[in-house]
Image (cartoon, rainbow, N blue to C red; front, side):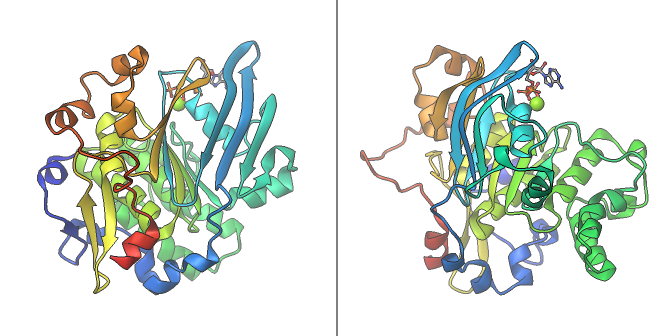
Length: 340
Ligand SMILES: Nc1ncnc2c1ncn2[C@@H]1O[C@H](COP(=O)(O)OP(=O)(O)OP(=O)(O)O)[C@@H](O)[C@H]1O
Ligand SMILES: [Mg+2]
């Protein structure tokens, strides 16, 4: 993560002076209590569930019996080698691909049985940052971000407000009339992030969201993913190969103070927030599922090779975690955040 964040051991408070003030802190637009009204949220049904999913491109079997769930307000980080099927999983969840066998559920509804009209309704709950950006070349930056809201028939004034706020957040308000071909790779990625977040999706799929971004912007995107998890119960899948991103997402959390002030806090070196889990795939199968602390402690030689020399390891080795068995201190649920 960027140097500002890694060296800052004090909780960071979101204030007007902070660079994070640019972040479209969506809870601030509503009453905080409304956003955190847990009674209205069904925590029992997973937001996403894959059961025994097989998928092949012709005779290339990419996924072989993949099972996992993403709970409400959970981040699932998916790791694998290149070509391991991560982007394919996200496209299956969006309903852009259909599994050869197995089932996929979104909010308890089996999308593998849905027709195109039903799928479109489900997609409205989802935001997706595609690995390759997937912007429409003939639309401007503004239009790329706005079109989903326009399709839903939202009044133009409301669309403008939301789109401009998101473009400001990704620092692209000055580029809003440009075409994607006039942008750098990192700028296109940021448009893709803004587009994924329009309409307040309850599930967001991030395919390599920080690739090609400079460290401060990458840090801001990670802060947003944490905000979505801790303040809005958004469920997300984050595909990344950047271990500093994995470390950040598994150790930082947001806490709401008595006066409603919101702070970023660091879980230290424990890396065991249980609302942020890692799934690792190899040859189309799950080889690991758990917290990053468990990942580091895994005896699997492939996992060792995968994370050797990365950001995840050195600091943990320097400060081994002191936890009693069964202790679950790292878990920060929204209830805990509220009661702090
Ligand atoms: N449209 C396609 N047609 C045929 N094969 C494909 C297609 N898309 C992906 N594949 C193949 O499926 C496998 C999984 O691809 P996928 O893009 O899901 O991997 P990934 O884990 O996202 O890789 P990376 O980390 O490089 O992005 C690869 O062998 C890839 O070549
Ligand atoms: Mg991919």
